[in-house]
Amino acid sequence: MPPEWQKHSQTLTAWPSPASIVDEKILRQARAEVSALSNAISRFEPVTMFARPEDVHEASATVSDNVTVRPLAVSELWIRDTGPVFVHGTQNGCSTGLKLNFNYWGAKIPSSGDEAVAANIEIPEASVIDRKDEKDGSAPQGSVIPIIDGGFTSEGGAIEVDGDGTLLATESSIVNENRNPRKTKKELEELFEKYFGIHKVIWLTGVKGYDITDFHIDAFARFIKEGQVLLSRPSERADPLVIQAYKEAKEILRNATDHRGRRLEVFEVEEPHPSDLPGENWDHFDVTVASYANYYLPNGGLIMPRFGVGKLDDDAYELFRQHFPDREVVQVDLNILPKLGGGIHCATQQVPMEGWFGRAVRRGELKF
Image (tube, rainbow, N blue to C red; front, side):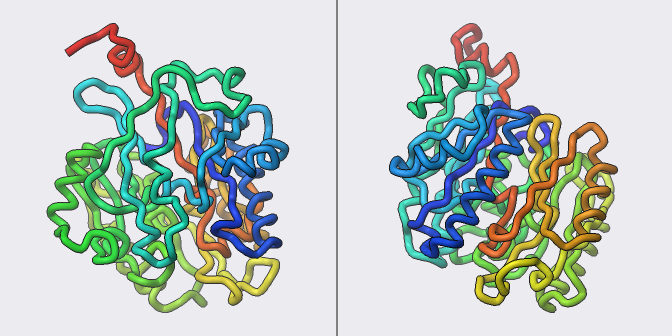
């Protein structure tokens, strides 16, 4: 599984639907933020936005020319979790999508059809993407990336890799009876090795039941690059369970080594308290996820949230500029997505660019 910082062919997003957000005002706000996010990413690489067939026209009117809206029965906007994750084949280098058997974060909400999203997504092989041909919203022509079953139940937001054999995850969101009741940690690690090319897993404890995701890693701890991890530090006023999870994670990471034996360097970014976000009272929502660690890396860029909290926004911006000097850092205003339980990374999914070797195999120019 390539790391997010490697080159992409495109980014996937999903248009929010009333099937998952019933309040009209909140739905409008969520759609505005997803459009702004998609447009920001489209400055760096093509974006494919999936929308329910009846919503394609409305969604298309809100996005730039480098965003293609395609019809698909999507309900949740969190494409990172509902959609496939993408890996490169170890034998032939070709891209493959892995279906992680989305079950609504451990059956916390009723089904709305999104369990079928990963299997129904059609992504053109990177070398045949032609944005002019796709602007009508039709399905891609030619070779498409195959989607296979990953063999366990999880979500893309629960998986963080360095591309060099190490995976970072929370036990609470994967080693959990609400997703994988008959699988041991060892069995899950064997599946990570088989499908992701992982040789070492660094497990953080997390917090079962704290939020709908059971404490996904992508809002908590992220690889900056091989050997370096960014850890989200909660507000001093945060839930004691979150503060304890942070302290435990900090200790684990500072004593951990990656697959290559490198001692991890740990950097921290402070997150705001949910009540400091402007707008409606956050208590009206479920758990608010206001994490700067939930950023996204399009080609040559870094898309991060701006929560409207002043100094913390500015400090996070400068931290990202320091650690990603070769990328343009772009802030996108977020207010409703965090209150809905997610953020920028949750609402995106990268499709890695195949190298020349994988493309040659797919075209039949090389055979095994």
